[in-house]
Figure 1 (cartoon, rainbow, N blue to C red):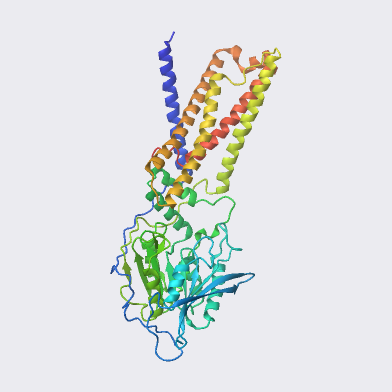
Figure 2 (cartoon, rainbow, N blue to C red):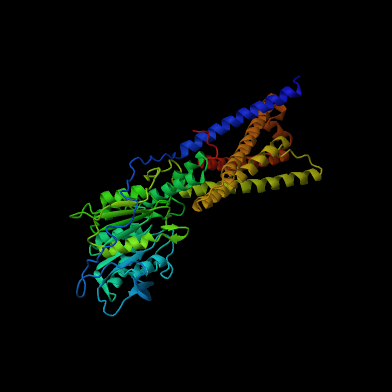
Length: 549
């Protein structure tokens, strides 16, 4: 007869061994189902020629565009003029949007026609009255007429965006500004920020009369590549565990549930190659969401490649500025100063040295193609797996409760029902179910928390490291419970083989009604375990059980 201690050690050993096997299997499943994440490092860095962002000789700029009479007016500094604001209506195809026109208030004898700038919004909504207000006002005070149209929203959503159609809408605003009093129609250009930098080159490629192009915080690479690059940078800034980076290609590389997002692979380079006018690029060195070196290199190499004479490109980096070219919430004053000087100085300053200047940027890795998940490339399939797992666990739990209650009713009536679920299996079954669900919920909560920290450029090592440890710990609890359940099921099967009277056939012949209860109970357990297994596979896919595989 074995001592109790020896028996306990045997159970512990079998549980540990089975848990290890299950953990390795889940780690392999997680690795096989989706791609790894290993972006190439940035090795060819941009070199700035000067720390000053001033374009050309700031003290002697003169506007060189056509004028009504006399010589061109000297370049005006920001704050030279008061600004008059007018709200206009821009008619689009099937709708209209408001637009805010800002123009310098000049003396009656100042008849020089002024350059104009139409602003293109970044992602999200864009109200004409608030968007670009400080930059547009500052440019107008320096003698540049600005027009900020509201973004058209009836054809714009998270799932569906047509950049070519959006370009046609913004081109209507260009036509409005060209017809505004005091504006030189041959000196009207675009200022495009972030997402707008995918749209503006479409306009300049199809409308060569657009005088110039300002690209602020431009992604340049396709949206999917930019999104993966941004997530990678945000996670690095937040200090997340290395295992979490596997989430990037699986989330960004998959087709999201419900379809749409066709614009995720939009390529702006063909439009850049057909853009022949002067281009000014602006980046903040603290912009973690954009490939600030790679984007500039692509534009320097590609802009105007298919146009005679090419395109003249000027690049400026602003120290510590974020994606909105702000420091501490305020647009860097040098931005409107430099844009105004460049716009008013064209075409003389289009090739003014230095071509690349400002603070030294640093980009850690390259934005590149995002690997596609092997088996779960469809977000619809991923969602279906989660819903099926949830349905199985809910249905299995409710059905098991009904079967157990019925068995108790039989017992109270004096019957002798067969045990629905043995106590030795009931406890690990409950733990498996609860721990699997808890790990999944904790993973979602953790990812949301990390996203909030990342977007706020915040770090919280205790929350980031501790949260991930808690998610994985709950996953380990689920694995151990599954191991106990597997071992006890195997032990039960072994005992049935050794005791012929306890076989399912013998039990069915002896007590058919009770046997039916037992079969129903076992079916409920199978359904519950099936749901838990599916959810464990989902958790493995998102990296909860990584073992360096």
